[in-house]
Image (tube, rainbow, N blue to C red; front, side, top):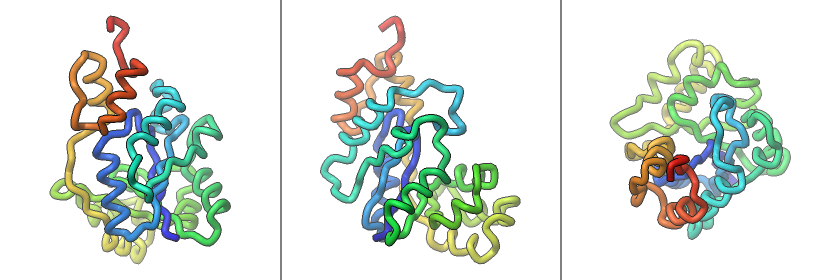
Length: 209
């Protein structure tokens, strides 16, 4: 099977995340997309996230009804800083006959040379680049230095050719958290079930609320 690996803090998950996953599933002919919520993302070690159980529960609610989507709690179970290479090693061992396709946006791809063991990441998974229609240019991203040195010209061309083009939707998790903190609506930016979960469990509220 072709497995898409979609990591992130998902704090909270929103419709933009789901649109990326569905675009990748369809355009890259993925059999399944595995959502992998991070315990502590390397680039967010100074920020407190919603509890792991809450983020996992919201993801499960968000993907309900799409049998090709699955939540994998490997990073939450492992705890600590969530290094992508460790997750891919574990997934490769658990799915030895499947191919792994790591879903990344342009900023993440550009920063790949600074990640832990980027060469090993490229051995374990194929990079699946997501380009927001009218906003991003993956072709320009993969030819920048030092990324081109890491990828090599042939792989850079292949990543650009196989890119997934996703409609540009300006939804960010930080916007949802900020809206909830001041009592504003997040309707139509996240699935209704996630909106209800946030309200019921009083997530992201300011102390004055």
